[in-house]
Image (cartoon, rainbow, N blue to C red; front, side):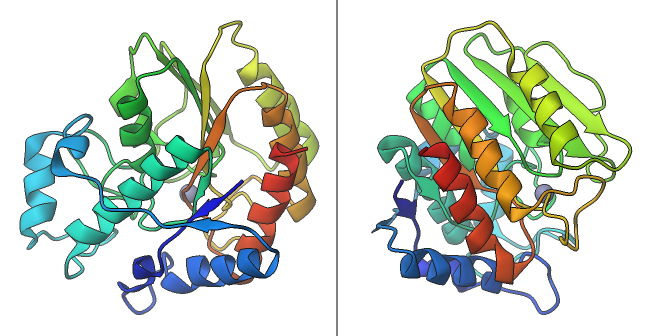
Length: 272
Ligand SMILES: [Zn+2]
């Protein structure tokens, strides 16, 4: 699986913010040393964003001057956020893994949140227009992705997450299949629930993975889910059993020293 990456995504930062350039930069270095091939993304166009976002949100990010604790108004964040969406689109095109920031799954049709400006995976899925299963393995619920696809005839959304931010995903709704872990779980229980959620009895043409690694046991933004590096291989293997063309988009994962290794383990599982 090729890694879609541009080092331009390391150019914006705010001191002390957990969504730091180091997390992605170190992961890119690790994966390069492991011999992965890399592909460069391009910025998506404004009209791509409008496939899933309201004009008002797009204008707000484009113009800047907004205030958000979670989503700072970095200089040219509009350009960086479009490059990250472009990463997801490229990954969808080549069945790759987009290793870009900012992440996307908390961006709804009309709002930013949780370090996300535009919903990278949602734009990529919407552009392809295929019958798609989105598997969101980030430790947080992808409220933005649910908001965008709730009630869709072509997309089913599956998410396993812990308590806390953003507080959504408590129950399943229509085509959005959620499981909230309220107490501590390890790999075994996680895999059992994943199995249940994946038993949808539907046919798909594509698997899109919102690949978050803040389920890692030592993650500072983690919660009740405690997975190990080895767990990601098993998770990848389980998703590979679906036997679908697959692409992945990075979401969270806040241990810079482990992110690359966890991604590598996951991709090995996907490719086994
Ligand atoms: Zn997360």
